[in-house]
Each structure stands twice: as structure tokens, then as C-alpha cells.
Length: 153
Image (cartoon, rainbow, N blue to C red):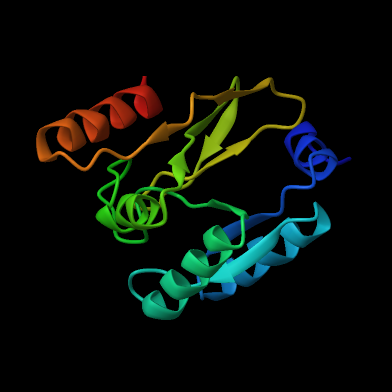
């Protein structure tokens, strides 16, 4: 079954690429994403970071949508890192947060407390309003704070 988000993006002919880790886990995720018609850019701030940043910039400039996990591989958990926001600002890309919640899930004993939904649990996906990353430092700080509040509420 293809998730509705992927079907919607396919129908609109928008290519979506996901940033995944350069690790073995990232290989699994990249393979899973390809099943749904999503591309993958491999890298993180701790491994292949520059190559991933260049690839994401090229994808955005080509009109693709790029999905990233905002807290990066080192955390802190649920805290937006500067890289994706700086890239959005530089390429004039909008930030469109997506929040996923599960009615029942397992929580892994990892730094990010990764959650895996139980079979048949209710999954709710919240698509938040796309916004431009402000240039002004005060507006930027308020923007980041609002993102974090919306993503963790």
C-alpha cells in the first residue's frame, strides 16, 4: 500500500527526496523509501555531511521537495539543527513541518527514543503550513521556537 502523501506528490508530479543516514540503517530506510517512489540522499552531519548538503541544495534547486529529520544524528532530541534551516534560507525553500503520532507504539532505547507503531494502531499525520525562514535574527529565533513547539505539542 502506498501512503496517501506519496500518491498526492506523485499525482502533482513533485519529486520527493529523503535525507537518510550513510549508515546501514540509512540503507534500509533508503530502500524502503524507493518502494514508495521517494528518492534518497545519503549523509548526516557526522558522515558525508558536505556531500549530502550539496545534493540537497541541488535537489531543491531542481524543484524537488527534500525531507529531513530536524534533530540530526546527535540530537538533542526534537531540537532543530541549523543545517536544514540555513539550506532552506539559502535556496528560498519553504519549511513544511510534518508531525506523525501513533495511538500505540514501541519506543526504542535510543538517543532519539525512536517510535515504531503497533500493528493496526491509529496513525495521525499533521501537515503544517509551509513557511519561509526569516532573515531577521529576532524573527528567526521566534520561527525556530514556533517550529519546535508545533512539533512537540
